[in-house]
Length: 503
Image (cartoon, rainbow, N blue to C red; front, side, top):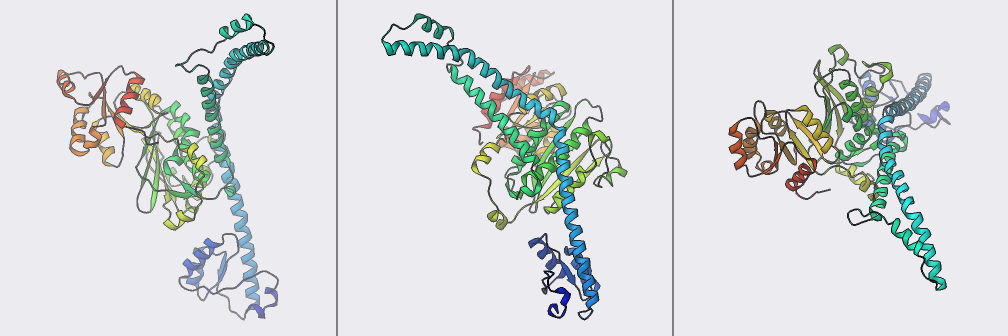
């Protein structure tokens, strides 16, 4: 047929016969070649619909002898392929712009995160200059005297003594330089996170990614926003499978959902706000859920929440593209973004990411060891705090949030429900005197159902309001930390019951 049509020659067209299911065959071809135009000449209209559903740019029933019809078909094919390419590039531009818009939201928080270690570097440099430069001058005087056989100048010895480095834990100057190095590493990590987040989609091929690392990458960029507005909880199932995804693109999705959650909790006054991120997996998908205690989403808005340019926020807080682009990103990766909400109580966004096949894992580039070493900052210990006092919970969040993954329950029943739903804390910190099912009820349930966790429970309590707690505390075999709790004491107790770090 191609040889009999002069207008075909010179247009770079290729013809092939597809066998089997039309939609699957076209989809497989599109998967292999996402850029080239794909047209399908069908035998009937159902085949036309199948080809278009599989990703063909054009499909039609055209008789082989109808040269004019074939020419028109190819013209439509080329036009629609060009429009598809333009639309894809426009989507990439929108996605990158939305990512940079989100990045702008973080400037103040990131500035704080950089200024703290930067201040440590600047102050340490000033201290080093104050002690080191006079000492170097004195050392040069002593060296010159030694070279000519002259007596060592007493003024040089006095200068060395005057500017002797202060002793810090017996380490002197080494401690100053260690602090400078640690602060510089912190700045470098922040810059690396920002560079990865801002990178264009086309610059980033899929790579093997650990789910907790992926989430923590987003938390480092936006988590400070949560700490100012509420408590950030992290609840990751153990042994989550590896993903094969572009790290920056999926970080963008998690960031967009995070930002929505933080904007939501700012819209309503509550005694305390929580943003909770959890990760679970089944046979096909990893589900990352972000829940907030904001006002929730009205039923009429829920139907349009993923529509482009639709937003319930003020114009200053977003373009209305973030959720639409995030859903498109996940769908292109074979996943999905969905939402659940009870109006007036909060919302939960669910990011579904497909679990790759063994072959995809084998064929995907692994991140370099150096990058993994820098990124592996996920705390080895997950702590479930059970307490009904919001002030205490906020204090625990500030104390534990930088070193451990934090989960919160307000009473024994909520803690039991979390454990039954799949939460896997390494350590529990339990207040004894709780409303409803109290600390004793929770510990009894743990002994009966999770004895491994019962041995890793810490009581952080004032002792309770009733004398019946006194007898319980006298016979309790585990660790008890009495309120007012000291941070160092609680951290040491967590380390002692959690055992050696696996990080």
